[in-house]
Amino acid sequence: MKKALFAVAAVALLAVAAQAGEIKIHDWPCTLTPQIITQIPVVMDVGYWVQIPDQDKLKITLSQVSIHEYSGCTTMTVKTNATITVSATIAGTGAVPGDYSAWIDGTATVPMGSSSVKVCAKLLKADLSAHAPQSGLQVATVTIWVVPSA
Image 1 (cartoon, rainbow, N blue to C red):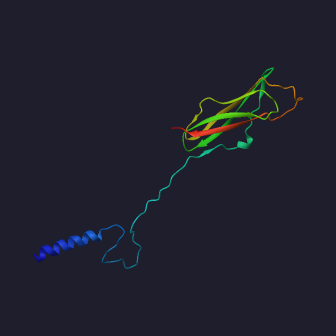
Image 2: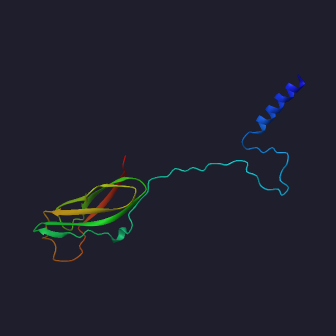
């Protein structure tokens, strides 16, 4: 009976000694070597990331298609850590009145990684009567929009 009680006590003692985060050994190494007691996972939430390098170098130059119609495109690099959808809007500056439009030429869905996206703009019914001939007149601004794809 005493032996059975001793065996049960020994098993209970071993179960307590095996709990995580504890070290219970009889012989610690002679050199006082550090011992692993636990490992803690490190986690983080990774958010969406989109970058358009060299934004300051991008420009759409409108070229004449007909007497009152102008259009042009530029290609930009888009880097992202998720699949995104790209869109474009345009706002005229008032320098040359007319009907402005902007769009993404080709697919508007950009996969994770680095991709080229072609952005285009058009001016219809251009009223050139207020300006003498000149170069580099800013007539509109294209705004690029991105949203993660579902």
